[in-house]
Image (tube, rainbow over all chains, first blue to last red; front, top):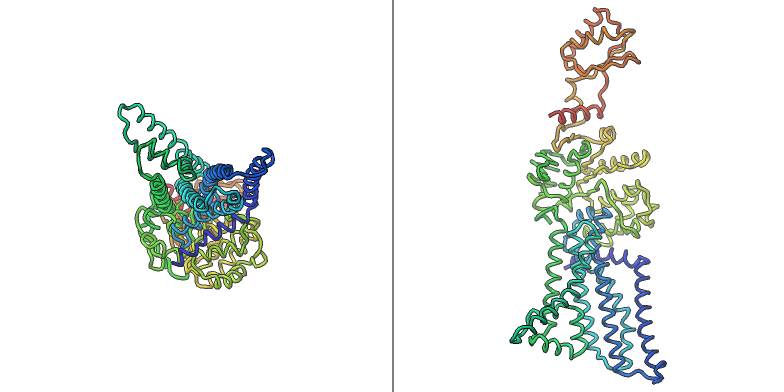
Length: 279
Length: 311
């Protein structure tokens, strides 16, 4: 239990990450970009249109755009933060010493993952006050915001796990980066393409039947799932087009939990690869 | 106490380590000597649980590196030949991280860290960033790191490599101190005379095999049947060279005309060597001096490893 609660790798990684100038600069620019967008939009809606007020539907639109911006940020930053965690240690020749300590492989991997995610969470949480401005103008419920944050958390952990797995199995950080960004591209782009293909093939057949594949591809695609979370029409649209009446979020949660489990398992098994069964 | 039995590591058809058998008693400083690629680092990696042996096993204080690696890690302090340090971590934080990695409570670490820094003469660098330390200081800090959990066995892979003479001497002094603390130390080095001074026992490894093992004196003895002899002559050397080349037990005859020296290896007994000298004098060969050169550890190493290469 003590091992679970106290992780030296996590403490060390957090210390190193938050000492780095790059981290505080990254955080500053992120908040700056968010602020420019939110305040710029409010300014446009109130002053430029001459109406002098901000309507709830405009607030809701801002919420959707902000959610997509944050999703893009997560998809872009997570691989960068996680794909080098183990391979960098290998390149810097610090891994050998770390592996001879009495820390278990899972402790090292979980510590690395938690430290990377902690930074991303800090980014998301630090953006929360800006995000919450939408509440001032109505149109969005706190429950929606909570669901979106849980969705972000799951996505971050899954992509982070993939990054750590690639970082463990590849020797070079650059290869690991390419593989992680490639996987992310698959999850956001290729799945959308497969969804379109599956729908197309459904339309061309004489009898329209439920398209399970289309439903699956749409359900594991983060941007499409966000759409179903932020608007009730989103999930209805998916049910209508695929004719499958099964909540997409269950597939999403199941699939991404599977990614997390498999990736972390491989990373833990492969960390002390030269030791075979000896861990 | 270290017991190595039939330790083998294969990469394809290449044997990096071939059937290594070795027993090292508690408190012994054991020097591992070998050329690059001889198998020293492979042995150390296996003992440090970084590499799985293809065959065989090693027991460290009764714990098997094959079956109980987690337990072995608690028994050993390992210092690799090449290692990196974390940027933006101070010397005390560096030690604190590894102390925590071995499960040492925070309060105990607070007491331990100044003691270890004092042991390796780095007290004044306690709050310096590790990556800004000199090579020698990093090596000493890494040694302190290897000692943080008070291991009974230290595995030090070339701890003095790349250090300037002063840093070497400092490192040697620290190792002597550790020896006096009763630690079992396995140390590899290319600097053979240094090992001879520090080590109780020496193992010479070549081509993945242990080719000689024993105290420095015992290894010297192994070469006693082939003594290097040096003869200083006056004037023409050809007469002596043709005489010596005809003698039994003589090999490796080399001539240094500038210094009027003839060197050769002699495998005969003391009596036979005395008879050889007597015959040469009776033949009126112009000998000024006839002496047996002292073999140092470098010669021993060269001689032993040459034998293996020829096999």
